[in-house]
Image (tube, rainbow, N blue to C red; front, side, top):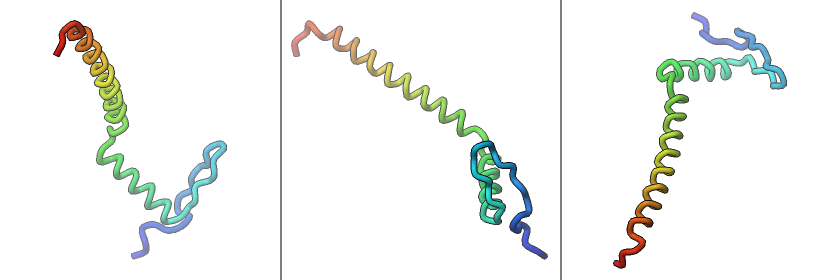
Length: 78
């Protein structure tokens, strides 16, 4: 049985203004591994975007809570 991947098996179209993708076994195996990772978990991009929004909300909420605490306790001595 021959090797499942060999050089120059698949030709990639070069994107405008970018270098052409090498047609090597190493590039093919990288592409297959990246596809399998995406296939296993296709939603990490949306999860990262949601996490960033949640972190922004938490920072803003902490700032508002700190300002509220300073306003409520400003006249009381410790």
